[in-house]
Length: 263
Image (cartoon, rainbow, N blue to C red; front, side, top):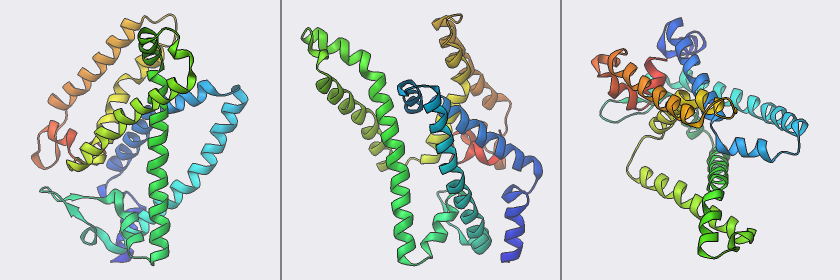
C-alpha cells in the first residue's frame, strides 16, 4: 500500500485527475499571491526600504530561504501520505474532513522526541513571524488615526514618537490578538479563515493596486472592490456546485472548500 499511496501523491494527488490537480495549484498560487500583494506588513517593508536595490536583495534572499523550506515540507507531506494513506490520517468534524494539509505534522508526531521539539519550534516561529508582521502592518496603518487623536487630546502630543508607537502597537495587538484568541476558543477552522481572507484579497487586489495611481479615483477603487466581492458571492450562489450534493455556500465556508473542489 505504501507504493500505491506514493504513486497517488506523485502523480495527480488525492483528486485523482489532472484537472483537479491543476485547479488546486491555480487556486493556491493565485490565493497566496493576492493575499501577499494585500499584506500590509510587506507593503510597509517595501516603503521603509532604503532603495530599490535593497528591496531586490531582500526579495531574492527571502526566495532563497523560502523555497528549500517549502520543498522540504512538501516532501514530508508526500512521505507521510505514502506511509499512512487516507485511513491513517485524522478525520475530524461531522463531515469527517480529511486534514491532508497536516500530513507532515502527523509524520513528525511519529518521530523521536527531538524531531518533535524541532517541529514545535519551527511551527511557533512561523506563527510568531506572521503575527509580528501583521501587528507591525496594522500599527503602521493606525498611525494617521492615532496621530490625529493624540493631537486632539493634547496639541503636540503626537510629536513624542515613543508614545505614538506604544499606542499604535497596543491597539494593533488588541485588534489582532483578541479576535484570534476568541476564534481559536470557538473552534473555528483556521484554514476556513485563510480561505475566506484569500478570496476577499483576490476580489479587491486589482482595484486596490490601481488606486495607487493618480488616474484612478478612490471611489472607483472602492467600487471595484465591492463589485468584485459581490461577483464572487454570486458565482458561488448560482454557478458553482458543492461536493457530495452540498450547497455552494456551504462549500465556500467549509474547511478546505475552495482548495478541495474548485478554483
